[in-house]
Length: 233
Ligand code: CA
Image (cartoon, rainbow, N blue to C red; front, side, top):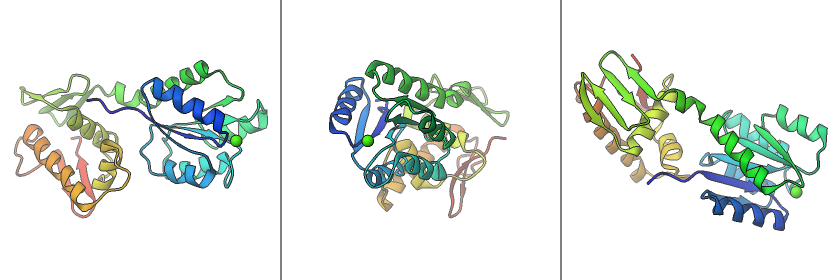
């Protein structure tokens, strides 16, 4: 089953927040929310959300500060700010802090849904343009069709295996810790020892599929104490 897109709504006005939660649940998103700043920041920093809708005026901590803190941790996290009124200074400040878009209140819900879809689409461009991944001269991976070829022999992948490969490929410049994979690929907020073994089991399966010699990995290497790294050549 395809993983649902997760949205975090940080908004203190009950009527607006409740309305937004209903609308996005109706559109098939998985929705979580917070009604004050610190809790919103906490949830946002869990890293499990595909997009964050962030009000500016919030009790405890304002939306600009939250946006700033999120950006320090994750420069790619899609964020849409909900500004109290169409105040140009708010908008400029929000965008300069790295929000992907802003929507001025009062907004049309239909328009907000379209803006959310547009930001999500933009955030995924990198994945879509990498529909074919080539590793070395023997391995080709077709991410859209969950398929591949190793030395001209056909391979089939599960959706989860492809999500793992795509994430490692997007971060091929470094080893990726198991906890980060559980967080970003599986969507687990907090991880335990028992769950990190899940990652190892999947890696063993992937090696049997993509490695010419699974006992001496060439593409999917373990970096001791640091995680897994995908070698691209
Ligand atoms: Ca507010």
